[in-house]
Length: 378
Ligand SMILES: Cc1cc2nc3c(=O)[nH]c(=O)nc-3n(C[C@H](O)[C@H](O)[C@H](O)COP(=O)(O)OP(=O)(O)OC[C@H]3O[C@@H](n4cnc5c(N)ncnc54)[C@H](O)[C@@H]3O)c2cc1C
Image 1: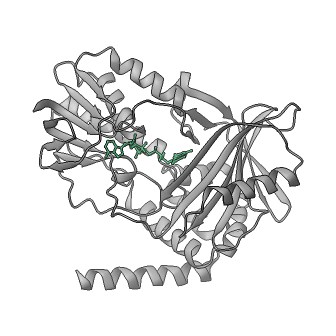
Image 2: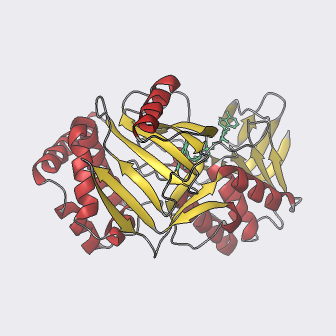
């Protein structure tokens, strides 16, 4: 049996971000850490994008930053600026390389790849070839039985064209001028240059599609806009839009990442919350040597996201118009602050006021009813 002071289960975004922060803040000078990861090697598998208020925490991993973004609905487009908090894309390949190089410099850190975690019982972790023991477990794994009612699911491909066809100054955040059957649907375009862009077809719905269906949607999108070129990279994903029960977690077994409810269930954004959580946890550990769980997100976002998600689930066809008006009737600062967990009370009010009252009230009462039934059944 091998023993470490800390063990991180899963060396993905949250596992590596936490390891990086623990190391950066000096928590691993005299303590050992193992990261147990099932993949054999790291390669580009995601492009993490977000509005960056922290100014270049992972400077060398940025693929591109933009100061503008567009929303399109009913053949109308609005262009909004985000100079104060640029929209940034982090290339996962660069990120993995940067973090792993950094961790490799500390002999107390062991990234153990090609290791599938089979079971976790109290402070004992079992893998096919080894058993591990630790004081603290940071766990980013989602149990197979944990399904979600709603997913944000998508497929994207990076196209490289011979001609200058993309507007590289602005991100197409949501283009709703597309099929809206069986879920909320939009296209998302990250133009890295005039010739190269990641184009994604994104859905909010209960059912994840087969890959060829997303590819057909992308083909139609490209054909309509007369875009042609070579596919350089593909990404596919399904983010569960739900809060996971954290019953199993304790101060010695802490859930992190999507498994630790760091995903905004209305948007799928997770990157920033993972960074804030990792920084705060490492800070606490350094200052006091113990862990008091840092708050991930205030109740107001959880509550408002539940209502928004309920509207998406029941009335997805009205959502393109709602999103369009949300961006058109508020300043970009207000909406970005709201989507990035940093809105003030006044900004929250502005967001709430700009929503259609009847639909949101109906869904508020549905949410209230379900919460009461759940409490009674407990
Ligand atoms: C394709 C894609 C694009 C996304 N884009 C964005 C974005 O633009 N912005 C944003 O904010 N969020 C985005 N997200 C959401 C979120 O940021 C990511 O899902 C992020 O990777 C979540 O981090 P995590 O650590 O929770 O999970 P992961 O990064 O998936 O890490 C979990 C790790 O655990 C390992 N693992 C799983 N099971 C085992 C096991 N049994 N034994 C050992 N290891 C195991 C996996 O191999 C993986 O490395 C995206 C998600 C996906 C899927």
